[in-house]
Image (cartoon, rainbow, N blue to C red; front, side, top):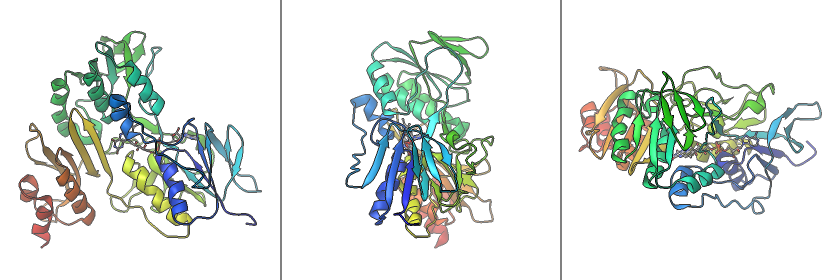
Length: 417
Ligand SMILES: Cc1cc2nc3c(=O)[nH]c(=O)nc-3n(C[C@H](O)[C@H](O)[C@H](O)COP(=O)(O)OP(=O)(O)OC[C@H]3O[C@@H](n4cnc5c(N)ncnc54)[C@H](O)[C@@H]3O)c2cc1C
């Protein structure tokens, strides 16, 4: 090589920052450059729709790039790769960064809807600060999409006294993530919080002063926030030769559409020396089969450990039980695992009550039935134990699973003992 090894990380969100941290923690002695399109040091996104909105909390990750001996370049956008014979380089709007290793961690960007009216989003710290400044009693706020972000924003806006309407094209909140049957049990939460929820209402366009609904309806609004999902921020890699996952596929059970940089279980892309992690990566899941692109904080936190281990000579596989949490309408909602339409839904407790869980089980009697995913509402202990049961892949006793008084670990132990 004739020079110290150079690792370039594109994207300075949690996954990019964690990659830098983990490389140095593992004693990586090469040069590191971190390129981030936003004009800010790395920060955490989960607080944006929670305490940043409600309390003005600081989401900073407190990165110390001097201590990390890293050339951090805020406000610089990756545009593509230069694969000239002299060696590959990341091309940005400010120059070229030759690399021996490239880590793609450019995350995801919100989907916009058609129409000339102003639509806001909730993805960046700036978005959250702008929204916080807007929320006031009587503001007519239309939120498009009753997914995780829509629900959390509705929670904060209702608490600030706004007149909130959530417009959802699907049959229930969270239907694309959880299925309509489970998602429907969260619909009463909106009413209890004084939020109007309109399901089965597709927005045709965002207009000045409101929303044009399919079928001719009109919803007046002072402000509109579009929260209908995100797409992996990988268009800058088009034509680079790095394989992307098919983008035309159906949404996965987490609601994440296909797409993203296709990586194997070691988080290696199709081009030697290139890795990807976080929201922009579709990784090969040995546990669940196929490519998974998971838009969860936990993935952006831990996948970089595997990237850094493999860059520093290790041979590690990333095979998580995906985990996500959401705080909405005063409830702690948690999801672990991965389920598909063929998996059987088992209720654990009454979903009309304050605390309950939904479990997804694969396999049919008499073959062993295994817990593959779980949603809990105000039952954090279930989630903790359920995540371990999913990871272990032990068969479960359905009667024990359905009984909220039976500890989840016992429902698994009962059969496997
Ligand atoms: C409002 C909100 C609330 C959330 N709440 C939760 C929660 O409660 N629980 C949970 O599990 N998950 C939550 N998430 C999801 C979680 O935050 C994400 O999964 C996580 O942030 C992904 O991290 P990332 O680093 O992969 O991507 P990102 O955080 O998107 O970071 C990618 C960075 O790359 C930059 N970038 C993009 N393109 C380029 C380019 N071409 N060149 C250079 N830089 C580029 C972007 O500007 C961005 O700063 C939430 C997300 C949001 C937006």
